[in-house]
Image (cartoon, rainbow, N blue to C red; front, side, top):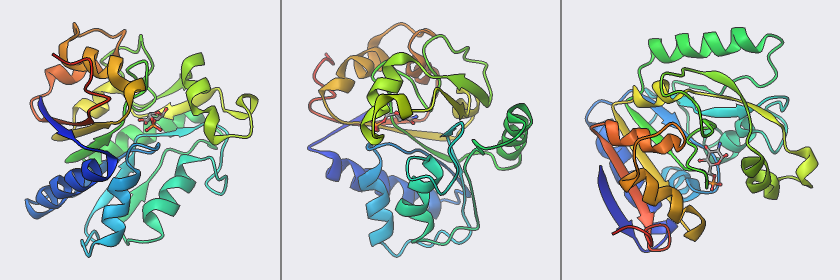
Length: 234
Ligand code: GLP
């Protein structure tokens, strides 16, 4: 695991963007993308740049069950605002949280990932160490699946909704195995509320109780963290 400490999210987003450019220059064709506040500066850098993504396919990590792409709290809407409206990609995919048959949607998403192996995966991290929406206790062998969100995740994500009762209780998420199949993984984390999860990701025992610890088993992971997120590291 390579660790870069940055001053703030702006510097972190710029660094992640540099890594993206390098990956694209070296032939990356498929990006795994994340939502949340963490990658906002990364998307800003992409929007500001003249990077050509017209031959690139993107596959998002996760989506809430029950929110459609027009819903401002959906991850699809977030991606449209942050990226899809600004850069044209060859194709972009977000799990369909409105699917009639969620199990079928999940299987189709795995087929999609098999067809487009992910070269460059962006990740944030939850306070409990979740990646995507893979909550503590998720088997490392899991592929795309329907998730019951942890109470702590619902509470943490309530800031984007009018009140906590509106936060969906379920999501579709790429699984840990899907994430681990990416060639390169860039995990960003900012702020003291992520310090514990970052400590465990780097130094903790590899355990399904802290999903991000699985990254210790991957040979191409870059961590981009600020001082506060790094504060518990040795
Ligand atoms: C959410 C998302 C994750 C994200 C994490 C952190 O629950 N499903 O993909 O990485 O929480 O979010 P934030 O970046 O807003 O702190």
